[in-house]
Length: 623
Image 1 (tube, rainbow, N blue to C red):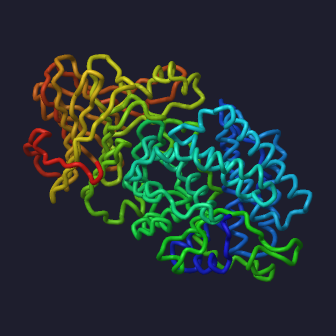
Image 2: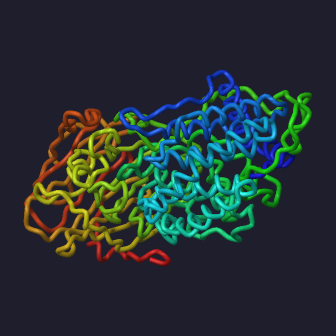
Image 3: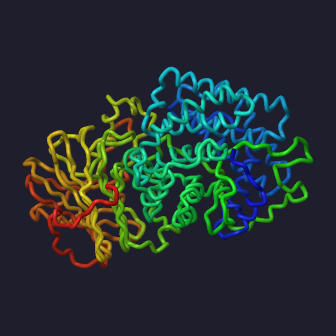
């Protein structure tokens, strides 16, 4: 499982500027680990969930293992062994919230393979017993009790099954009957979670949960490949790196619909996806994706930074060599080579901490401007619509925009169909408020979830009909996309049980002008709204939005007789603080067509826009 070939890894680390930067980061993070206490239980604020502990342990285990290969010596392996031993001393791994257990199993199983050779026989036994008693057996009991995650078509299935698979493969030689039983259950069960990926790699839970699910799907498939139990990876999984790339805006923020955070941790398996897909663009994405690099970036490095061939596709605790001070991880030079020869100055870092929850405070992660390598890479114009995930993005010239279709019944979804996002010059002007704090009472109870402001239609930049909220049955059906030399377009038909409620389309021009077009037949009060972190000044039908030294005008083009209103966004008691956001809206009683244009300084005249049916839309391949 995840055999680390030291010579290959060191050659990779010296093979490109990207890899050298990753090596510098990893070695510095490793030194930080040595200055901190051993892992201890840390739970999310307000929730009996120990995901922060599991993710910190995963980060430490991978960082210490890769640093050991880079620097040699015994220090890192010995510390790694102590870290996983500390984890075995926890009373349990929180099996009642089995995501915690699965992530703990994964980190400990990897550490068992990488550090076991320098641990005593008694300590190795403790680790094996912990993996079995605190992980595999509770997991089998949950499966036999028909735990919901066994058949779930979302991240819970992929993470829980993936963690079980990794741990079972780690112990398969020592506990074959138990581990084979786990594999016999979890391998076919994971098909449910993998079915959430569209054939285009899209993921309906959004970018945060794509990262979470894909990390464990990749680790499990990598382990199975190396064990010889499978020969190929589902194409939708292998190609899902495109979803990660396309959902990331030039600001470094993502299409943060539903419970997705605006800033998503950089996936540690981008390199594995690049290698398994064989796509050169995936290797580019590994290099330019925003966020802190992972130690695994060196194990699975993009094609330009690694020798040809794919030395190891899998996570695996393979033998690391004999015990004792004189024997190291396979191929690692010993203490005389302990100098950090790959380290260069100028890259500071801290121990990585990927998070899905708890929710950030409302302004965390939303910087005024965050130019990234991705933002500056000179991307050609594109419009990509992911189905059935129901997320479309457009990028053209200075502008980037996203539009939400799909379904409100998706896991972690809000009642937000039709919400749009907009950036100019890497600064977001049309925003989503983000998710509510997971610790609020009943957030995941279907009867209470949509009582919270941030989950409701009124909290999103979409069209409201009277005071009604969207329903869980509502869906956004893709009408198609259009790409012309001077503009891009996409549109959805938003449908409920009574048929088409309305059609919403975006057109993004190469000068950055965005037109939001709604076609409505219903005769009732309509509220057109958007939320922004920009400073807002209103003058009738026009509003000026200013943020980060950039100005964008928002003009009501149709209907002509309406005018803007604005107010600070409400913050209900006991819920997140939304005061940094301004709500900009207008109301109208006129059915037919609504059009709002966002125009950055220097953009050309608005021009006429035909009805959506005349946009020349076509469905993407396979759509």
